[in-house]
Amino acid sequence: MKKIIIAFFIFISTSVFSQKIDDVFKTMPNSVLPGLSESNRTMFLVDTGKTVIPYSLGKIEKLAYTPDFLKIKTSDIGTTQIKLLPLINDTKIICVIKTVCGNACDSRIQFYSTDWKELDSNALLPDISPESFFDSSQKNSDNYKFAVSLPDIYPVSAEFENGSNSLTLKLDLTKYLSSEQLAEIKPFIKNETKTLKWNNTSFN
Image 1 (spheres, rainbow, N blue to C red):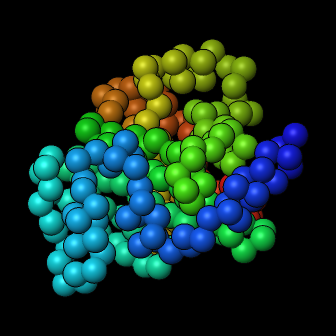
Image 2 (cartoon, rainbow, N blue to C red; image 1 turned 90 degrees about the horizontal axis):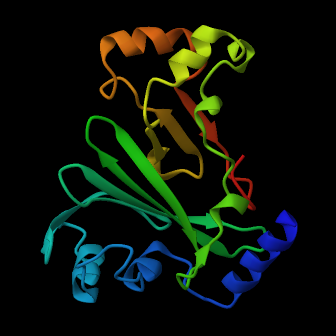
C-alpha cells in the first residue's frame, strides 16, 4: 500500500514543472504563510541583499536560501523551513516545517506536491513518538513508566541541517521541565537527537 501511495505522489508531481524553491515559494498558498503577498515573496527572493522585509503581519527574515531550501524567521519565536525533496523519477515534493520555540521548540511537519496539494505524512515520515528517544529495554520498570509520564507533551524540533536532505529531530525537554523532572527522565533517554535520511521515497 505504501508503494502505491508513493507512486501516486510521483504521478501528481510529474504534472507540475516548478522544481526550484523560488517557484514553489511564489505559488505557496496564503494558508501556509498567512499575510505574505506575492510581491513580498518576489522581493524576498529577487533582492539577494535584503534579508528582512516587512509584511502585513510584521516582518520576515531570510535565514538560509539555496535552490532547493528556504528557511525564514516569521516571528520572535517562529521559523518556517521549505525544502524540495527529490523523488525517484527526478521530480520533487515539498516538505514544510513550522517550528515554534517557547519554553521548548516544537515542530510541525507537512508535505505537499509542487502544486501545493497536501500529501499524507504517514507515508513519508516514520512515527515520531517519545519511544524514539527512550531506552526501550527499560520500559517494563516502574521508574521508566513514571518518568515518561511526567511531561504532558514531548516537544520535538525538526531541522534540515545546512539545508541537506537529512532531517535532524531533537527531543527538547531542558527548558520545558523542572530540574527534578529532568533528573527522573534523563536515565531513560537513549538519544536526545536522531537523524532521518531521505531515500527518494520517504524518510527512515
